[in-house]
Image 1 (spheres, rainbow, N blue to C red):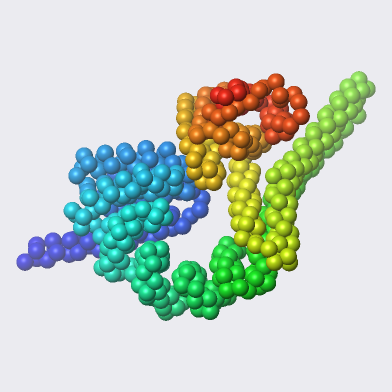
Image 2 (image 1 turned 180 degrees about the vertical axis):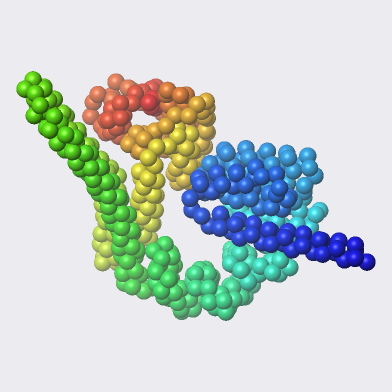
Length: 568
């Protein structure tokens, strides 16, 4: 009897310890997920995973955190390689839960690259395993993901509807129906109904999301649901109802005070006002959108200039400390000079030369900081200033057409395009300038991502990507920015002028060199014309290449296309 009691107490103690340890790991996992120092988190997670005492669930939770951090840093290759390794390991261990999760994570990674067809392929693999093993959380997420892709591409809408319904049913079982994700299932299904002209069903679902968001006091989701619901009534030409909903969405967005949300709400409300014939109010709100974009630009520019000024002051402080140290050393030298005539002469000469060297160093550092500030201002002016001028011209053209009571739809579309291009250029500039140095592979991935987005405006052009990165090659922010601008110009020229059906991006690096190509197969041009008038874009590329001491090669053949390569 005593022996049995002792065993029971030992078992109770072990169980209590395991539960406490599991709770601690859950808290740690949440803390790591919310930590924005992604590199440090990756190192910490790898250290934790090397501990052989973790059970299967604990290990999987930490591995998912690791994959999320790879995705945050856009290390797509590292992410895919790691997930494929873990799929193989899960298959060897017959761990279906881990296998399903890593298939889902691979799909998520391909979605962000973006390669949505490949993403759907891996989400379906996750569904196949999860349906057999009744992994309801994974099923809900993958059903939602595939349905969203089909809806976005406007294909297989019947299957998309079925998947959204399954996700909604599972959200009830998983008790996630009241969460943001659960309400997103319903809102997207409503969008699908709206697109297929089932307006009553769409209105019922939008009302459900709106009511739940009100009950949960979720202002962000409420504003979003009101916007899309107003669009539904706009399609039915119920302008009063549409304006009522978009007006409330705009008021909520202003209260939240997030520029992106306010800008989106303004666009919805402007479209409703324009459709209802309230052109003057629509025009005023469109001007406000322009002011918001200008405000964001100014804020980001001021932040960047403040950072540059802070770096300058830091360098200046370091130089002052260095000079103070030199002054202290000078005093010691002066005391020693008293003890000998020859020693005094030699020491004085040394001091004079040394002082000149320090002054030159100080001037060089100050000049470097001034050059950096001027370079930053010049790049922002050249690339963003011209786009701001274009946006301003488009707004003025809109004003003129409005006052003359001429159609303004084309003007509004041009303003939208200019605004999106301005924001994207600003984000890319800030991203590059925030990197003290980045690898050639990361740079090339960013260039591919930019080209994918740019080609959305040229759907007839196919992008082909070729890369071979054998060794790491690092670029500083100046080289990366100038190289990125050269490639942007090459891609723009290929899309606008080449009449090519495809563009090839190729990148290669070794330990001592990095080369990138942009090639089209269009009408080309005669290279002898480069020395004449025109071709200002190509001349600008040559100037940028010269500024970073890179080799720019322009290989153009009439009727066969243009290949532009840059070698660092």
